[in-house]
Image (cartoon, rainbow, N blue to C red; front, side, top):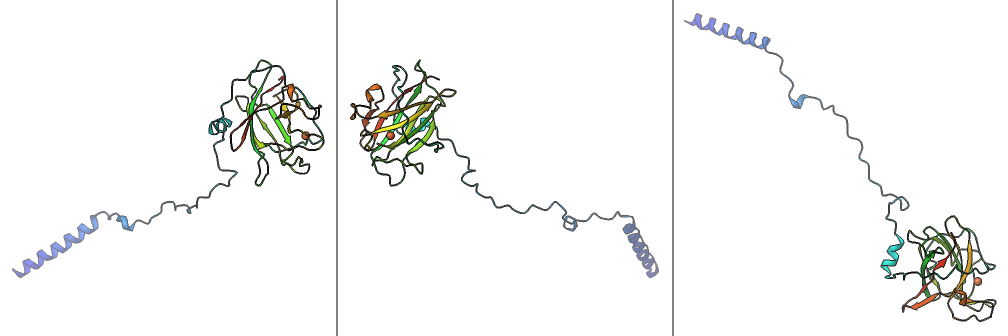
Length: 231
Ligand code: FE
């Protein structure tokens, strides 16, 4: 009996060894597989674009008119805007801007608005307006660009200028703003705008249709003037 048990045990062990040899090698478990996926790129710290690169919505001119609650009246055209002398203080290469107001600037704040129109009273988009004026003391900045600025009319032919009421100076005892208007593809029209009914020295003629219609809004003056030019 003992002999039979030993034989059976031996057969059993031999069979076990044969099973081990015929079994396919087991696949490595997940934990054994080396992780060879593409390494993650180094994290990149997001950087803020510089102010000049930051996309900003262009503030349309109509935003200004809407925000300031300044509706422009339907234009009435009575001939071309009269030309006047350029004077000695015109400068080239002045900055493009709608506001000439600077911190600490003295003077009564004024907003000048209107259209640039053709002879048929049709608005002229993209017309150049070039403004220059004296400060509240009647002095021009002939070194820098103070109280000088150029701009283009918007798609509706409108412009707006934030400035101050200019002062007078001995040779021109009347408030005035110089301006050149150039319709797209057209020639310059050089003139001056006035704020009084009567000229003082007899040489200035605001009655030539160059007087700005002014409304006192309390904390600022609102001036309306439309230019009529030949495109
Ligand atoms: Fe002047």
